[in-house]
Structures are given as C-alpha cells and as structure tokens.
Image (cartoon, rainbow, N blue to C red; front, side, top):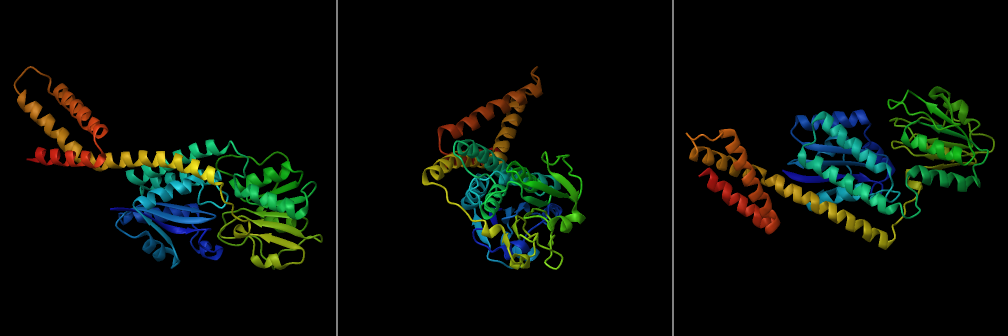
Length: 381
C-alpha cells in the first residue's frame, strides 16, 4: 500500500482542462463509493481551482482519474511528497489567493464525504486531520497581516477597480452558496444594490445578507438586463448565462465568473462594454519570503506529528502480538492461583504499553521498529 496524490490545479492546468475534471458533491461521493468497492482507500477533493485524488492503495491515482474523466497532465506525489502536498494544500500555499480560508472547509467536507461512504481509512483520515489542524494554526499566524482571504474578495476588488467604485451599482449574484453569499455581502457593504438568485432552499438554513434581495433563479436574465455587476457562483455543471439569451445594460457590465465549470458563456465577454473575468484572469499572488518561512515551520511541526502517529500505527500489529504474548504468559504463570484473571491481563497489558511506548522516546523510530519486530517474532515463537 502506497500513499499517493494526483490531480490538477490552477497553477499547472488551464481552466478548460479543470472543467472536465470538476465533480459535484454528489458525483464525488459516488466516485469515492466506487473506490471503496474496489478496495482503494481514497479522498477526492474537487473545488473551483483543483481536482485532486489522494489514495492509500496500490492503484496509481493518475490511472484512476484517466479512467473516470480522460487524460490530462496530472501532477503526482508519492510517500513523503504526497504528505507534504496535503499540508501545502491545507496551508493555502497552492491556492490562487495564498492562505485563503475556503480550502480548509473544502478539505473538511471532502474528508467527511469520504468517511460517510467508507472510502477513507485511518491513514488518510489522520493525514487530513493533521493538515487541517496545521492550516488553522497557519491562519492564526496569518491574521496578523492584512490580506485577501478568498477569491470572493479578489473578485469584488477587481469589479470595483473596473467600475471606479460600487456605490449605487446594480449587482446580480447568481448562486447562493458560500462564495455567492460572500460576494453579495461585500458588494452590499460597498454600497451596491444587490440581487441574488435562490435556486433552492439552503440545507443549513443560512439567510442572505441584510439588504440583499432574493429572486427566483428563473428570473436571472431579466435581472441581468439592468445589472452593471454580475457574479456567477453556482455549482451548476452547465452555463447559467448563455450569450444568446443575455442582454447587457446600455452602460455595459463587469462580470466575475467564480465557478468551475464556468457559469458564464465565454462569448458574453465579447459583448460591447462587457468585461468578463474568469478564475484564471483574477490573478495569483506570491507570499513574502519571511511569511512563507513561518508557514513552513508550522507545517513541519504538524508533519512530524503525523509521521510519529504513522510509525506507531504501522507497528500496532507487532505491539499487539507482544501484548497478547505477555497476557498469555502471565495468565499461565498464575493459573490456579487466587488472582483475578481479568485483572492480571489488564495489568500485563498496561505494563507492556508503558515499556513499548516509552521505548520510542529513548531511541529513534527505526530502532524502535526493529525492537518491536524482534519482540513480536519472539512472541510468536
């Protein structure tokens, strides 16, 4: 069994390629359910800017992705490289907006989905938990500096700059998910008159920001006629605004398409006085060297904790063999006596635990593994 990661992200793959590999939440669950059926421990992470498959298995994740969606130039990591990659994703080092907030929630959701369908075993579960924990610590450090924390902030800034301000602008947000809500809230805070489509009631009961008007999704084209600002932020697998049905306002419009697959048909960007930003045209920043170094230090601490757990996890079958041997021997030695057999087993187990787990504190892990292996072989006779 090998720990491996493969996929695509905005740093190395064009938007058109990423669209082919985008999974809806239900499609991702179906995919991981299929992985469980073929014995592949997996977590699938699919966001606007990435689709990544993490496996603890013998099957190459690149072959699995090709089988599912076709060929592409996937990145690939194995072993220590795969571990570090998961932590870099959680840290936001591979995000379009460095150290953005949304990726942590997306990783939590991916892990929860994998657990719900049973495709995620202890190794990937612990790895994702450790990476998410590191990501939280990193953002605590990052909060000390002013920065954009989401693609929504980047998009609103781009729109503001293009229009010279948002006060009094009519804005339409198509989509009422997390990104749509963020955009609606920020646009309203800058003085725009915001309308947001509601396709279906949110399961979490979250209500739109104060002052934002809700309309039916079916009324989006009518609202777009008078909107100088449009944001596309749905999870639709198809365009939600088509060029043949779209009428731009007389003064033109600035449109930010924050969805992958895209919400806005690219041809709309060719309309007179219409500016269209997609995910790839929003830009990508680099981190200052000192902040990058601080993030790396936090990651290294959490990665060390994961390896400590992983080494012990690998040794658990040997440790259990030694425990069982001690219990059997102690019970045999005291057979026929007045001692409580259950109490004897518990005492012997506790004693062995103290000896074995303190061993790894006294020597390096490789030597500890060798000791566990030798003792387990002796216990088997």
